[in-house]
Image (cartoon, rainbow, N blue to C red):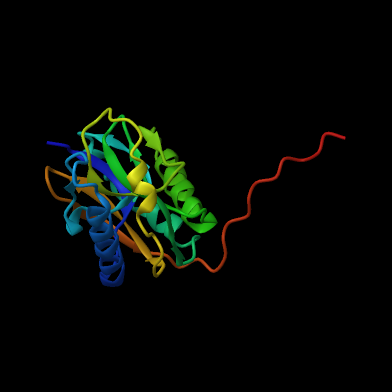
Amino acid sequence: MSQALFPGWRPDAGGRERLAALAAALAASRPVDGPRLQLRRPDQWHATLCFIGHGVRELATPALLDAFAAAASRIPPHAFTVERIAYWPQSGAVVALPHACAALQALCDATRDAVKRCNIRPEKTTQQPHVTLAYLDRGLGEQAWLAGVDCAGEPLRVERFELLFNPGGRYEALGEWPLSGTALPATPQQASLL
C-alpha cells in the first residue's frame, strides 16, 4: 500500500472530460507494436503540489490544515493548458505536462511553504506539475510516438486543492480548500548590494 500523503489538485467534471479526451488520444496514438499502455482511472488523476511522504498520515494535524487554508487564501483561481505528453523512464509514468503557469507553480510553492511552516520536511517539492495519465514499462527508450498526441483543448481549471491520502488504490481527501486570492504573491526580490 502506498500510504502517500500530499496536497494535490484533482480535476472538476469539465477537467475530467478534458483529461478523458487526452487519455483517449494517447491510447489511439500508441503504435500497434508499441509497448503496453496502462491507463490510470479518472478517479486517480491528480497533480501533486508537494509530496509530504509515505506512512505519515499522523502529520495531517489541525496546524497543517490551517496552514493549507492560509495558503489557499493567497492564490487566485486559475487555469492551465497541457503543452505535451512525456514518458519518464525511471517511473514508467506517461504524464501530461502543462504550459508554464505561474499561478500553478505559486500554488505548489505555497503548499510547500505551508508544510515547512509546520516543521515538516517534505519528501519532494514540485518543480514540474503534471498529471499522470498512464504507465508504460520502466526503463524504455524514447517514446517518439507521444509527440503525435494532440494536446490542444480547453484549459483545466484550478479552483481548489485537497490534502490527499492514498491508503492503497484510491485517494481520500483529508481536507479541501478553495483558492480565494486576488493576485499572485510577489516574488521575493534580493536587494542590490551596490
